[in-house]
Image (cartoon, rainbow, N blue to C red; front, side, top):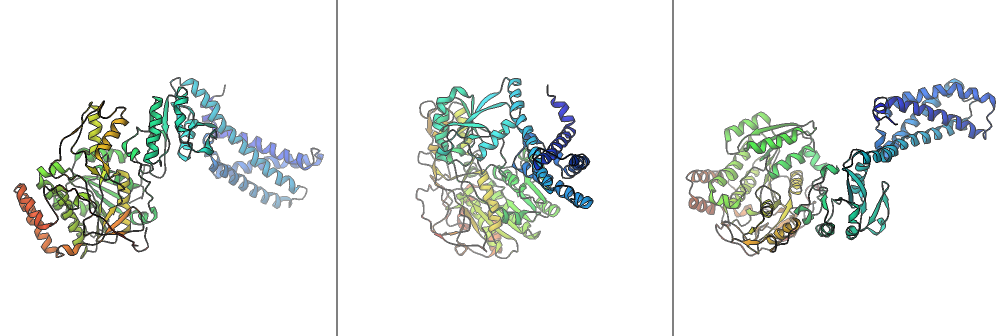
Length: 639
């Protein structure tokens, strides 16, 4: 019986003996073919005298080029190219040796050429044998060894489906047995991928449900409409189904079956993949010291993950929540990276400590995501929004200028447009601060404005999911409430792209797609959980809360949009003429607002904010959306 442990211990020696045999057979076959299977006796001496040298040269070259370090059970096209390279290198050296010793006198050149192709063919065949052996014979042994293997079928016989299938087939201890694929592409019907058949279309899943235990959806680029169709077909089988992450969630296109997760609402939303200009982002971030505030939050933590792929020299993660900071620190500790990651417990309202953080770390890029964001809570505690969202931003701005930060990006919100709540007004003031300070600073200050992100802490979707888990009801403030949504990875990626595009003073607006009714989200989530809305799980309307709008806007009536070279990023045309541009006067007003906030009086804070922001309408419910106009624009040739 084949002993795996013995082979693993002496793998290199076994492969060297195998190669020696292949080289000998190839050399002999070349002589036989050259002389039509009637080799003259005198040529046998050439064979016996040159064979040891040929084997030795091959061994030396194969070792030098790392040929014996390849794990052949995972052979791919890349390994095939490596075989060609090492065999060709060996024969170049052999040719030089033969020419030096005998000038090819008495050594038929055709034998040399035939020998090269035979050696290439036999060594390739030996590696394919190892690959096939591990994929099928050892895989079948694993099937018998692990009786608990789950029969799995993959939805999608494309690039990602092929990667997942290869992973299952290559891993004898995989807990899965691959049954096949389903795919709606007509050209793939009954085709094979990695030796596994496409068994039919997605709608035919229910007809073959008895042949599998689980379903894995391997279509990371599927649209929302396609995912709804797939999920409907999966539910009809009454089998467990999961999906691989979306393209927005994948970093560097790396996918594995270990990444499989439950289908989320984001999958139903199915927003188009974000195509980044990674070259321009890399030029900005590579080798830089980057500070991220609010680094433990929903957006901040994703910015940390995304930044690491652009190889900054240092990543300074600042957060005022010990638990969040510990969580992102524990996550980054598992990542193999040359980037120095520093986790700092700090609050943007504490200027002295913040000054020390800047002085100790000297960031070159600042991504300012720290903020209070929950509208009803900030309506009840407006002083907190003023201190953190306005005062904290003021501290970050002045220290960034003091320590010569190159680029500063403020993470803003669509609630800053015609604000009707303190949270939105505080973010609008933060936007004004960075735009005004940019006029005189060498630091490039800019802001990024976008709507709701799916899955952020305390937002509607996690709340609905918990309510469904508890048996209902699902509570919604108003049946006509609508919101813009995007995923956390998508928002974070576009924030990095705006940093690369911006030249200072801009408020960028991310393309949010079409707004969605909150009640439709609730119904989709109820169905996704296996229930029927209003039958199994009731929906209850509770009325608008203080500071809430029926829907959010992305721009004011004075703000036209300017297109950039990235279709998902636009710039709001400068509206600074609407406000004072005297920084000292603006800063003085902010300090007065911060003084008022110390009194903890809601009415005083609202009144002063109204003086600073004429478009702030506290307590007003908006029910009219303003039209937008987009002009073409190009920024310094960047995308």
